[in-house]
Image 1 (cartoon, rainbow, N blue to C red):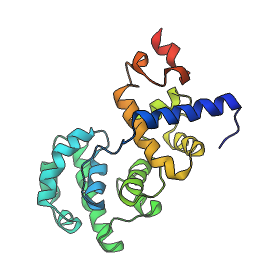
Image 2 (cartoon, one colour):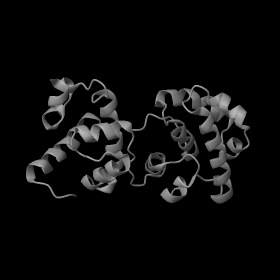
Image 3 (spheres, one colour):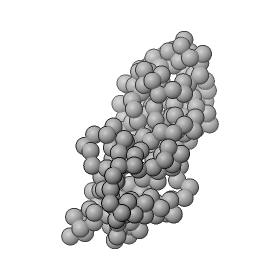
Length: 217
């Protein structure tokens, strides 16, 4: 943990304790049954809401219930299933290309190593971390737009790049708590600490938030 005075240490600990109390069962909103389905859903979630992804994936998984079946789909056909999902043409191409690589290099199993995941087309740091933590229960802390915003507002991180915010947050918590913190910060960002109009008067972190004056006044 980075050096800080006693007050700041307690403030940060209180923030995480209150997040745990408010969102004790926070988890991913994506619907999935196995690593393959989570891989697809996470790939689709970029610039698309989880709700929209959950509307798309049931029919897709009926058509392509396995990675092999997905790899055999024509790109034009896959695009029809993904229509309504942001960047659906790029995502169709990435999914088909990635499925071929996974079949050829990883025995048809979604890889469980960061370097292998990020080597796949369309898989960035955030997507890889989500898959590692949720599908394989490995210590990882993905930073999406909600976490980036909330962490900076709460004074948990200060960097202007998501990768650096990830490292700052990881220094504040033991590895076994990274995944839970990911889900709780997302939940808080969606329900309370919203992008345009944060609900500061309803926030249980109000007394520990250095940004509250900016948004209340």
